[in-house]
Image (cartoon, rainbow, N blue to C red):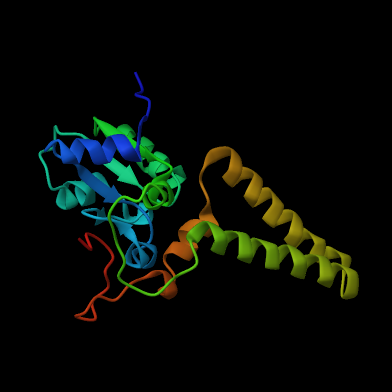
Length: 192
């Protein structure tokens, strides 16, 4: 029987920590997004690298304690929670509203690095440029270029209906979405 993802709002999660309960929080955004701003105390395990073993290595608490996943707005953390539930992890919660809601609520954050365009906006930008390029080339070079716009439209439709976005996964691996720590090492996971 499949489990459903449990959600928790940022105020309830913060209150748990204030009450002394263990709050094991993992941010599933890219290392660069995480380095820009993240909830205080969160560890980073990017969604494209999320495995049960990576999560277990990043966990601060015991395996049977609740695990809270956060992203920018709640979409990637929900996908991550579904992935972990399918892999056999239980007691997994997605933080509703993500880091955006956390910041808006005035809860403690850590800001470390340069601003980076969030992954969802990178996908929108690249998809828009590809559609525009396909239409312009179809009008000026050959009508066959309209296929590029159609392909991007199909990709966005599949992504919107399934939550699986190959372009997002590809962009997450790009150098500008990685973060170098003070040692010059890639901060691909567990950037405290």
